[in-house]
Image (cartoon, rainbow, N blue to C red; front, side):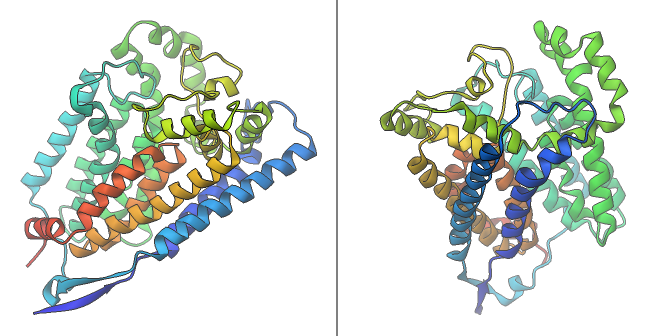
Length: 412
């Protein structure tokens, strides 16, 4: 016998996460960055520039948040589910199974090191067939943290909790060392929020996160340059850079938390640059190239150009969230409005599809983590992945696939 479970999507928390992140990026980040040692003031902008910059932020925030709310608001639905499955408790995976998964994920990262994939200071790797480079890279950032969180949830009341803690910590450290990515550090620290209960989980999460940030930063100079070789050793492992790194070791997490989410300084620089493309057709082609890079080529200014550099200058550069999409959609207000609204709507719908699938297997609490990972992708300017994740989420939300997962991992 089946009963109808009315699925109520958690819309409040995602909206608060997105709004809180935008408030930090565009209101708090810039003044906080000026309080740190060795901060650079950069170019001075008049009052008019600041007013126009914040008007742009407010307009962009309204468009993005309204689209996100619309995507979330259309997601409630009825799910047919048995009464027994309604009261499901996630089954605790056996320790051998957990160990095998950790080993598999560890070998996954070793394979990425072998092919020099997913290293934050290196982007000149040879592409693999069947887009396997993207599968390995984004699978580690999105799929692995979800699986690890599922494991952690099952051990929250187990006496083997600390053994799981050691396994998760070992894998997280290995990923941080092999990638040098603070983004990956954040993703692999997330499962610790679900391994403990009460306020102690926040203390454990913050401690692990700060430790992984420090480790990821150090590995950029003490490990990865020697794996990659060539000019990277001279750039990232020279004596002057290493000395500065050691002297500011205790401030590394603070520098990352404040400097990494770029904000008003970069936005004002972008708006001050001027035209990104010279015509609407160029802006349209640039917009299409963002979502379909293999079919269209960008004809506008690049992020390096906005920094006053040529495209062939060594190194990677980034901008704040709204600047990335302003550049990606050709600097045209019509295409930018439509593109930003589409991204916000897809973000809400994609989160909803994954949340529905998780609800079917009794793991609805993991939905917040899914949204956080999706929002980080959006914040990093990788929203071109959201349409593909939406398709994956839609498949996951169908009745058959979650029921298969349910039969494998749920308790009786």
